[in-house]
Image (tube, rainbow over all chains, first blue to last red; front, side):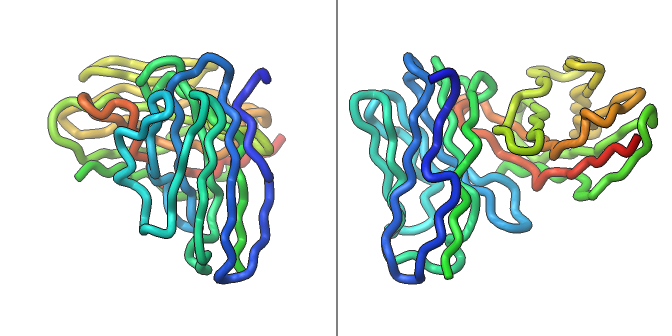
Length: 114
Length: 113
């Protein structure tokens, strides 16, 4: 597609359930990033992929969070046993190279844990 | 660690008013500095950037100057338009991990006709 596509755009889940958030990067972009925007917080870096590898996953807040990328394309962010504090907008971005300033962002997935 | 502080707003202006959104940062060395904008219903977009001290980034009438001495990167526009209504984020990235952006909390700007 023309831009970074994220699905679903909105997700409401019950506390304790697992959720999967999907990101389709721009075709040909080797780098992919996940960020989280919580109420009252700025955007927080979660994880960075180069190809299918994640050289930096330092921003993942707990071991309930994991992400993978397959075929150097689609990425899935999985949150297990969701908690209310996981409620946030999850943003995905991609870029041709490693430079953050060249990244294109998706519109995000708004996750609400009830 | 690195951090970015920006005025939280919301900021409400009349069309053609002067805009300033303050941004200061904490980082070792010489980070690159950015302003991103998020229009309603759209994804984040890079607005402008500066990579070294005294550089001025500019785009769409917006400007920001990298001030090392005051660790600041304030966003300015001389005459705002209704179409500038959006959330503005100041951000930085550092050298060896230039893929990673550290963002401020964002400032909501509303411009009234």
